[in-house]
Image 1 (cartoon, rainbow, N blue to C red):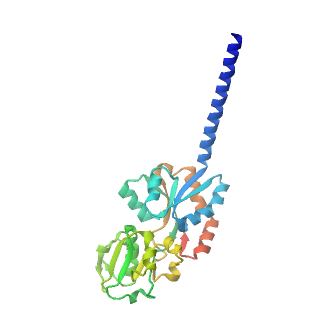
Image 2: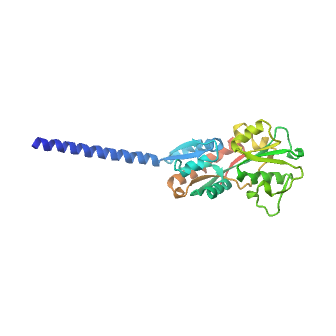
Image 3: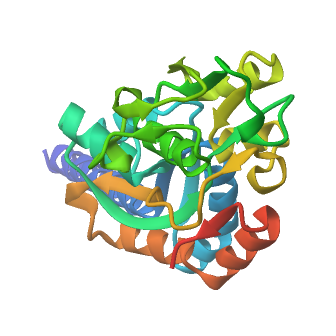
Length: 276
């Protein structure tokens, strides 16, 4: 009987020991997860900038994991479904529209950089030389329409209705179109570079991140280029519950580090600028 109780005692101790080990392992795993910041981003320039941020975050005790997305829909969906800690791909008007349209419980954790949109052409050196009835191709991202409309109005190619908020403007708001320009705005943003390469339009609006992918520089190659005072800064978006988390603060602080500002200025030479 004594031997039996002794055996049972050994088993009990073994079970408790294993349980404790398992418990420590779980805590260890959770602790490691707390030190990983998973961010969804467009490949250019967002993911490139984040690559430079990795060593800065490492010094703060965090490992940065970058998930590349080729479109403008999935990064917000993934953030909402808690597959990401944050995303970095969208400007403020797009973010505001996504939140309103899809009822996302997101917060803007901070503006990081501004990347200029431009109108490119295979044939034109000056936008004013566009032919009567010429075609202007714009993506189906409605929050970029106002940017394009503003550039065209500043170039005296069109005029919008009095009192129109240009950040909310659509092509229906154009009141004067002396050159009878034809607007096509049903193309996915990622396909705009292909339409340009195929010379499908007289003027083609391309976001800087996609233009960069085919070697285009807004300042050097754009026929019309967005002004520096544009309200379309790209931001870090997070779930509202995580807005004040240590991870979010560390990420935003790292992105505003002087090393990042220097990197962006040297690589993109003013076509992409860090927001202070």
